[in-house]
Length: 150
Image 1 (cartoon, rainbow, N blue to C red):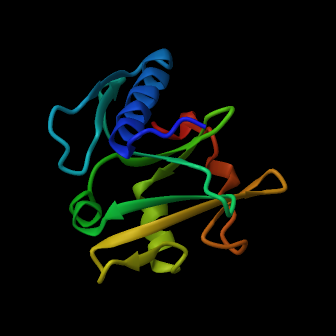
Image 2: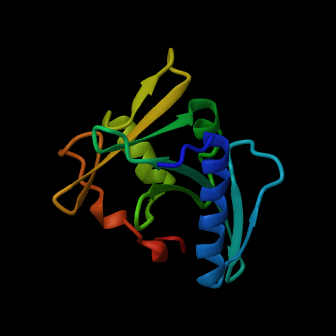
């Protein structure tokens, strides 16, 4: 197994998502400075802000992602999407609109960590279903659902 620094993994995930958007007809670009939004994309005169998080499966068969709380709270308006790259033999993308992220924070499926400075997003794949936090939060609908960005 090749071990790669997380900054390389994160940047690779941004390029992967940018490429997927370009193939789908979005004019997408990686931001020069990361202040909570990694990509800007336009299509049909609409602007989309996208935060990308990338992780490998850990030894407990869970993908863990951290989202800075201050960045999350700053992005409450507009067309904001969180795309979680589930890196594996076949990369998959969990695409959550801001409102869904907010709902999962309120439901405690996404937990506050590090003295409430970050949110921990834990994603597990069980029996071809995708769960956020635990089995009470099935988010399979959002897996590879690129057409939700509209």
